Image 1 (cartoon, helix red, strand yellow):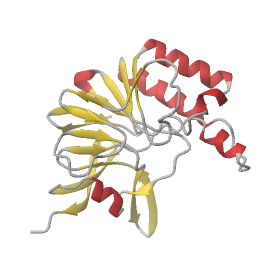
Image 2 (image 1 turned 180 degrees about the vertical axis):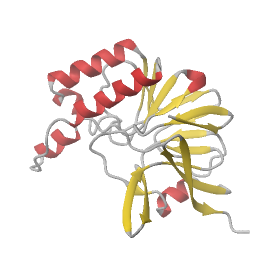
Image 3 (image 1 turned 90 degrees about the horizontal axis):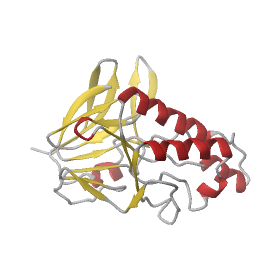
Image 4 (image 1 turned 135 degrees about the vertical axis):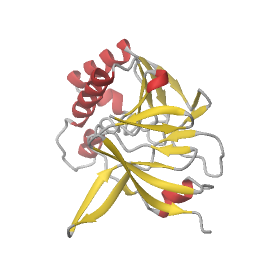
Length: 224
């Protein structure tokens, strides 16, 4: 995982799309969308029913890799209010084990605001070390903030090939995380909705881990 500074704190971003917060010994993840496949199956679109298992396996790997003892899930952890009831036994057991062995915090999102989260603590938003943790970026706010919701992806053209990668998007005081779930699409990181959500700002960048370095791609700059 590659370190970077945000709001006077040390964070690390890796290819798993989780962010490790060193001072809190915590993982930050957004938009797990557990049981998205089973939701679509109920509406006639048959998808392999293993997205929850794959997402939780990646999350368990990130916990082992970082040694984190806390987890902050920044909303839309479940695809809908009935997702927990639909979880197959293996995935449900994995989730139970993870929430029992860590200090787990669920932050509500627009998809799961009525979901009954198993284990852990459920909150609308949280202030940790002066940083607001919430699901959707609060436009016009000057406070330090980490959020999710938009599923940002960076799309670039390299040697004639178009490549899309999940990324974080950051201004001076706010950070939007990539979607962590195995079955999540993405919005272009430079989409006007994302840029508007981070205003006011002097600069907005996409952040992508590239080996041992962190690549930054300018998305917007305040006109001079």
